Structures are given as structure tokens and as C-alpha cells.
Length: 233
Image (tube, rainbow, N blue to C red; front, side):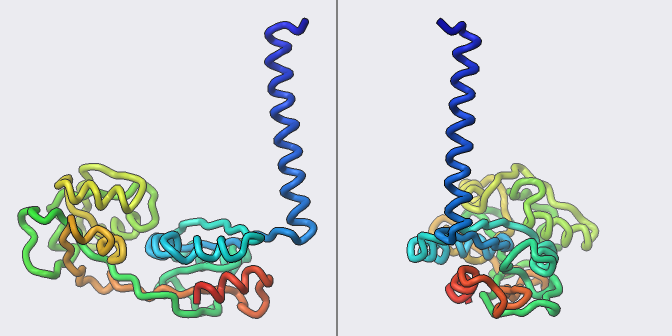
């Protein structure tokens, strides 16, 4: 009769064996061409758009294609696509995409959101400099969009006071709607929560960004990556 330690060891050994067999099955599917994986990098606004409708529809239509979606800042996306670390990227044109082939994706506008009864915000527009004294709800530390906004505040000689930082745009919008603070988010995220929030157009030049789909060469992509590029462009 195995001891308790022996039973625990046997349990772990079986678990490891099952993982090895599952991994072998996955690798075999890729090796035989039954499955393929496309590496896609996108910034925050593009990721939000992709996950709503575009990628779910693509995955349903192409059950043999898997996608590695990685949310990164635009400048890192440009570097990754150029180096071959990503097959496709969606990034803002300011990041320097001229060495890559590009197709328009969409225009991303950043807006200020606040609870409908939030005091102090008047009119329909604001600049980031107008907001530096406000309390903010922010995305988690290290989040690409939040780091971008924080850098812009630093260029103005100020900083953002965060009441709380949370991991996703939906959480930011919920907290703002309940009066926890204001936030800067993509217009598409604000639009989805329009019933509970009011938004002001951010007038700073950097707040309006052209996002492009990019690749080293669209013609040289794998067949699966070409299918994804066609679905996104």
C-alpha cells in the first residue's frame, strides 16, 4: 500500500504525464498543418475594438487558426513587427511605422469621462492641462495607455493624482460613473458607457491618433496571417 507521500507523488506524476500528452497533441496539430497560430500585437484602443466583434467572428469562421493577442504600446509594436516577433501589429502612426507596410484600421480619439454630476468640468472640450488638479481613476501601473497619458502630463510639468488604478477599461468606466474620479479613455470605451457617463473631447494634438494595421510585408505573411489581415483591414 503506497504511503501518503507515495500517493501524492503518483498523483503529480500522472498530472505531468497528462500535460505532456496534451502538449504533444497540440504540437502535432501544428506540425501537420491542422492548426496555425498568428501573433498579433495591438495597442489599448485597438484591443478594445478587436475583442468586441472582429476577433470573435474571425475565430468562429476559422476554427483552425489560433491568435496570440498581446497588448503593447505602439512603439513596442512597431519594433516587434519589424523584428519578426509579431506577424501583424495595430499601432498609432506616430510610433514610426514608415519602414513597415500599412493599412488603415481606424481613428482613435481619447476623451475625458466623468460622472454626470461630477463638479468642475464645463463645456464639451478640455485639455489635459485643465485636468491636472482633478482626481483620476487610472488603469493599472504599466498599462500602455495609462503610461502614455502619464508621460503627456509630465511634459506639461504636472502629474496625475490617482484615487484608484484598475486593470481594464470597463472597470475604469464603472468607477467613474459612480463618482470615484475622472479618466481619459478611448472614445469607443466611453461610447459603450454613454448612458452613465458624460464625455468631453480632449483637445491635445496627441489625443487623436490614426491606427494602422502593419506588417513587414503583407504578401509574405503566412496564409493564416493573410486571412486575419484581410479580416482586419
